[in-house]
Length: 217
Image (cartoon, rainbow, N blue to C red; front, side):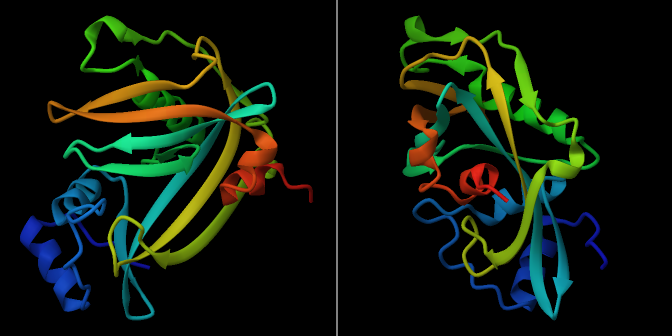
């Protein structure tokens, strides 16, 4: 399977049009834009190829189950840089950027999403986290749970996406014990995420990757 070489923005638009990808919803509601996809490709967050005469976006993702006792940390809601809000109910997840190792992707994802705790519009509430990450069972690579699926992209309607999904459990010290807010700075704007702790037994019913990790063989 051949991957497409780096290309210009116009090359990407032409490629999408050639394979009849309807982009009319892109950039509306909570959907991403062509420019977002262009940046992902140039940052090696994903790649594109052809499978069975269809244009497909390929992404490897690690789902990071941060646990505290019988609870797992879940994204409750996000406020995007453009001001749009979206309900999440997801564990922390991070794209794996080749040739990055799985453990490096985990640590990078945690630092990117949880480094700044507090409301960016209330400077007095903000502090920078200094934490240690303990990844459980990562040494036993044969037992790392992974699944693959191909489906319409949730970020780019009408574009097929093939996901390779890993799921791991880890512990992060110094995180707040109750609901909290974190933020990332992207292009001088804030991506704000509200987090809460959910009982693992309840979270299993909210997310397929949590269910995959904790289900018995």
